[in-house]
Image 1 (cartoon, rainbow, N blue to C red):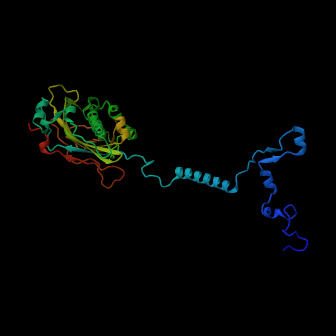
Image 2 (cartoon, helix red, strand yellow):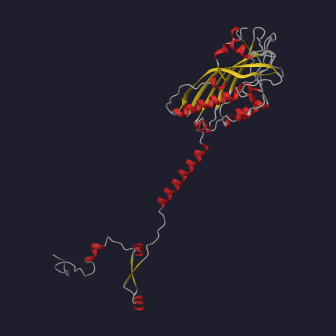
Image 3 (cartoon, rainbow, N blue to C red):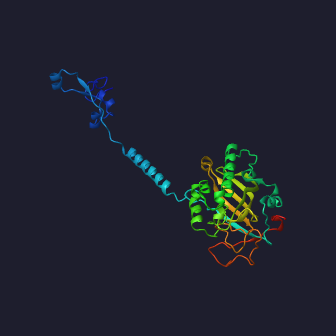
Length: 356
C-alpha cells in the first residue's frame, strides 16, 4: 500500500519524480549537446525564415587522440631509425664496398744449360723441337666441350671461354703487342676495376708480383729481338668451372713458341726459339659476361731462354742463337729484404730446345 497522501497506484508518471527515474542514468551534458547532429531552431529563427523546426549540424572535427599521436610518433621514430641504420650499419656484407683483389703474378726466367740452338730456317727449328705438333696461332687455342653449371647457362660458359681465348690471342699472338708498340688491345678486354693496376704496371714497372707488364702480356725488347716467323706455335687447355652462384672461373694453361732473330737482322741470320708457358686464371661475373670482358686473377709465367741476371718484368730480352746465360744467379737477390718480391729463375731442360 502507498503511504499517507500517495495515490493507491504510486506516483503518476506526469508528476515530479515519476517516469523520469528510468532516464536518470542518461546525462545530457554540454559536450553531448554540442555533438548532436540535429539542432532546434529558436522561435525567432522559425518566425523570420520560415525554416523547419530543426537543422542538421556539421560534424565536429575532433583532433587526433593522444594515443593516435603517440602511435604516429613511434612509427616515425622507428622508420627514421631503420633508415639511419641502413646507412650506418656496422655489420654490412664483407663483400660490399671492398676493393677487388689485384692480379697476382709470377714471372720466372728460364736459363739455357748451354748455347742456344739456331738455324736459318725457322721451320727446321720447329720441326726438331717439342713444338713440332703444336697448332699455329689462334687455331692452337681450342675451346673445350661445354655444358651448363648450376647457376650459369651453357651460353654463358661458352662466352667466358671465348673471352679468355680472345685475351690469349691479343696478349700472346698480336704482332703489335709482341713488338712492344701496343697495349690497348689487351687493356680494353679487362674489367674496369683492374685498369688502374694495368696502367701502373706499364707506367712504373716493378718486379713486385703486381706491376710486371710481362704478367699481363708477352712482349719483347724491340731493340733486341724480332719475330723471324709470324706462325707462332701454340698448345694448351682451357677449362671452365663455377666458383659460386655469382662467379665463373676459366683457367688457361698454354705454351707459346716464337721464332726470333736479332732486330734488324736479315733472313740469312740464324733464328732461335723462345718459349713462354702462361697459366692464367680468369674470373667472370654476369656483368663481365655481358660486356665481354674479364678479370685476370692469377698469372704464372715461365719464359726462356733468358739470362737470370736480366730483369724480365717489363719485357723479355731473349738469349738468341749461339748465346749462353751469364754465370751466376739473379743479381741483387736478398732473402731478408722486405717490400719486394724475391727474384726467381729456373733452368730449361735439355729436351725443351731443338735437337739440331
